[in-house]
Image 1 (cartoon, rainbow over the protein chains, first blue to last red):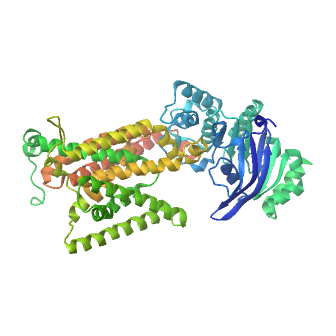
Image 2 (image 1 turned 90 degrees about the horizontal axis):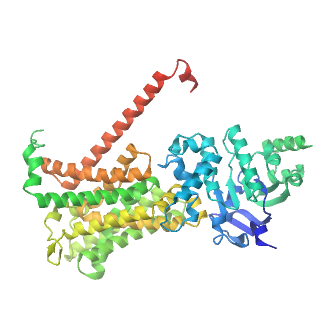
Image 3 (image 1 turned 45 degrees about the vertical axis):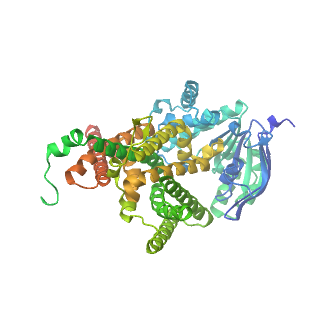
Length: 254
Length: 322
């Protein structure tokens, strides 16, 4: 098979924190040009999965291939949106500085961002409608605006595979709509997107495929096939409050 | 009070250092500036990474480094001592990292365990050697340093031209090296400090840069050590960047303000030390801390005024909603 058609292939991936496994034997082959949701309960290892894919956490076993090559070889083809809370928003940088960081992967050691890099960063800010804020200190932004900045930074990476950790967490409805239309536009340009998501009510509408995760891979496939009461129940186990959401979500679908 | 603080004499305090004792004034001020600026530049990154205490740890572990270096080489040449102190700094950093990673000890506790243990080893070894009468380290010098000694050092002579005293030369080279690194590797230091996850995902290794920064830290602290001692070196690491943090929210501007602050505290501090007839290094830190308080008060006043203006200009009732 052409490696260009499999942006991500994971085989038997097991990850442990302090010798306690959090992900067991994940096997998955992600096809190109899809918008994929990773869903599962808290502590299911959703963030761990995307971090392990990028080598941020060392795997206990298994391997990861990006477009048929080890991660290191193709790291410049992967864009990353970490959780918003993972950084210090009082950091003394402007919105523009943060978006420019997206270009760093394309630069050599000690090389400075060029005029062209700045131009790209400006375009990306324009796409998320944050250009007027380019010179603001990042601490003066709302949660939704911070998320848009992170998205602009990922766009500036000009990658083919995007890994996003809860880009919809704590954003207002307008930002959520803006983000999803942006993700769809990326998909239409042949990009592949893996998005950690926790809202079951919107999961089916937003994503082409779903990856159901609860320490093990419960299922991976088209959203319509994954969104069954049985599969969701296996994913979420006996958690009552979430389960009632699941029942409602499945009910809405029927 | 009049007995404690000598009377302020404009001629003696402000004019004479520049007219009569220019050589001493110049070298001490330059040394103070170089120490504060080099330490402050590195300190900016320590503050951003919430690692301010590591500087404290390194400055204390220098003592066992000096003693061990002497035990191994059996004489007290500057370069041997320098190497020993630098190695001790490295050992401290690695030890902190090791304890933090291998057990679930929090970083602050890991720092405290590492440097107090190393310092204790140093104290014990030093007293054994002193009893044996083979070795003597002036404990006061270890703690406080003596910056005024730079004026007494014979200057380095190259091709018959008198340059600077050796410790000033050394500190100058360290300062230039730090400036070069901060400019060249601005992007790498920025992204690994702000978002190590992103850095790593792009192939920029945060661990490598962390150790690079720690090496730079060990280097500046060890070079600063002779002039300002173990305790004041920590102030030099933290006071300039803290002052800069009060004034600006942009990293490049902070780095520039840090250097300006270092210059101002060296000049003001030296004159204070002439006036109070006290340790120049101590007076420089006092001056630096004074500048910090001024900057901090300025920011606080500006914030209050800004709030009052916003409240005054807002229509009645609007303040409730916001």
